[in-house]
Amino acid sequence: MSFKTEKEFKNPQQIKMLLWSVFAGSKGCINRVKIVLKIKQTPLNINQLSQVLGLDYKVVEHHMKTLEKNNLVTKIGEKYGAMFHISNFLEYNIGALDEAIDKLDRKMNSKKVYL
Image (cartoon, rainbow, N blue to C red; front, side, top):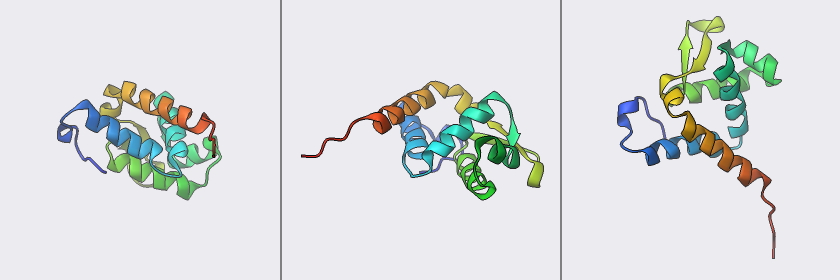
């Protein structure tokens, strides 16, 4: 699921679905959460993010492309030194992000019982 503009969202449920798919729908979703929480504090470029989070540059680059494609981060500048910060869309819907993070946290910390 990918949305280019905020106008494509018809209701809050679509926003929740987008955030859930980006932040909880794949193996690397935890890294996306870490990235967004970090750039929420201060804009950073991909190299700075990779160093701060201890992730490979290419991994961070991949996640930034996904976040940018879904209008969750905004890039300032071009090429290597481009800085990223959370988008106005994500800033406006930060409550939905917090809810998705809480759900993800509960999902990861729940005990699995096999019969």
